[in-house]
Amino acid sequence: MGVVMAACSFASLSAQYLKMHDEVLKTMKTATRFMMDQVSYKGGFVWAYLPDFSRSWGELEARRTMVWIQAPGTPLVGQLLLDAYHATGDEYYYGEAKKVADVLIWGQESCGGWNYMFDMAGENSMKEWYATIGKNGWRMEEFQHYYGNATFDDSVTSDVAKFLLRIYVEKYDPVFRPSLDKAIHFILESQYPVGGWPQRYPLKYDHVFQGKEDYSSFITLNDDVISDNIDFLLQCYQVLGMKNLKEPIMRALNLMLVLQQGEPYAGWADQYTMEDLQPAHARSYEPRGINAGTTVGMIYRLCDYYKLTGETKFLSGIPAAIRFLESMKLPDSEVARFGRRPLEEGEILVPRFIDPENGKPLYVHRKGSNVWNGTYYIDQDIAHTIGHYSSVSAVSVGQLRRHYEEVKAMPREEVVKDSPFWCNELMPLPEYYVAFRPERKKNARKKESLKERVEQIVKSMTGEGCWLTPLTALSNPYKPCPEAEKQPSSETCYRDTFVGDEYDTSCYPANQEVMGISTQVYVTNMGKLIQYITNEK
Image (cartoon, rainbow, N blue to C red; front, side):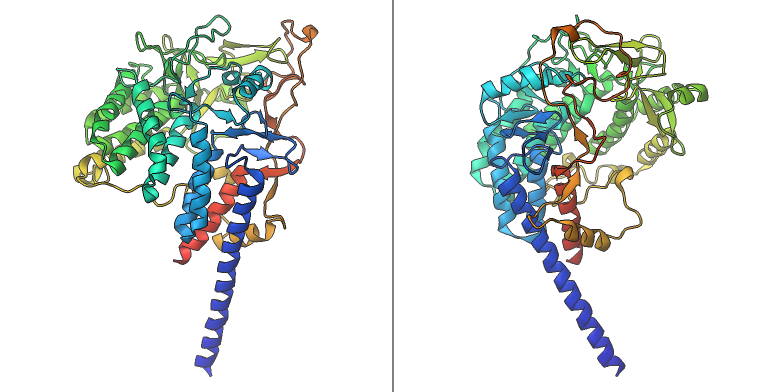
């Protein structure tokens, strides 16, 4: 009798398992069909949409004919579709990923790179967007001028290039190779002889802003410009066998050592002038200074570069960088005056920007109400700094030091065991790009199992095939600013907000529940469904 009951129980569980498996596959297909057939514009995406598609957004409000590159935009969806293809073996997902690749190839600039977005309605439509919505985004200074070239900012060009590389090596379809080669050539051509890259290329100097020279030609570390280009070239080296790429990669790696400032301020800046490799300014709320957050990122990167090369010189500047961060710890009185969020255990608060000459903090403030009458300014007062771009960084010095010591103590053979430079064979790309990325702490659901999460995802999909979700950001519709509102202002009520008055087109955190369609939610939910499917294998 016990054997019979056990067999019945097993059969029941198997039936439940098969039912759930089928439900997950059905949900994945239904959601993807909705996103590709109803939401996308010819295979391209922005970040968020109202359900009737009357308004949509990337980093600013977007037009229906626009395709956004910045994550969570179009390349991320393409990568997710390839993840789904690997998890299911269903050719449908590969076919949809090809549609995404096609639209990205359409939007490739003649130089070989990509801008933050492109408009399939044509260049005149794109220029008109820049002259209206872009120009009036007070805090969005990178969109206030139409360059007509490509950018490395926010991983834009490298994200598309990585996706094109991945879809090309999936089946070695030659249709993708010309665009991929063009992107590789663009990245190599735009690299400075010293090893770094500008923010934008081909070089232009036509946006002199508030009396400061155009920063787009400066050597740029900000938003991982150099490290993302290194990562892409390294992928081409390891999967295509392009051994000629080792020299430009090493040139970029060695520049990282040169750009570190000397003690006592032994960190890294976001930008550097090409002529003398000195720290430089960028946007008006990004002053010339050492950036604590960038320095933290560089410490981890240098540990990675040691594992890539086996050369201890990449560890040599880390102790000085850690000492610098430790020395910038703000006293409790300043932490209290800043007062925006509690520190986690082991963290210290440091200024985000530090004057490279004297070590003084550079805190950013603003006054006015919009791009026409407002201005940003810098001082040493931590109170009432801008809300959309933090003037401080939370740093776990102990965690940095432990990571450095662990890497330093590794045996040499273990250090380089995964390095393509030390392998005599081609190395494949990871099987999954999106689905198994760790969630950020604030979004992690520790008490919910994957099965419970997947069940909720399946149940919450609408009959149409989408996941409606409260939109996280909204914006004021564009309208021209009257002359009376363009006079310099000392208004302070917008000093720490994301958006100014009704003439500011910058996005701001939603202060009311507006339901919509989110590209990020689609990617996140699909990632969980993919995890469930692959865990069954």
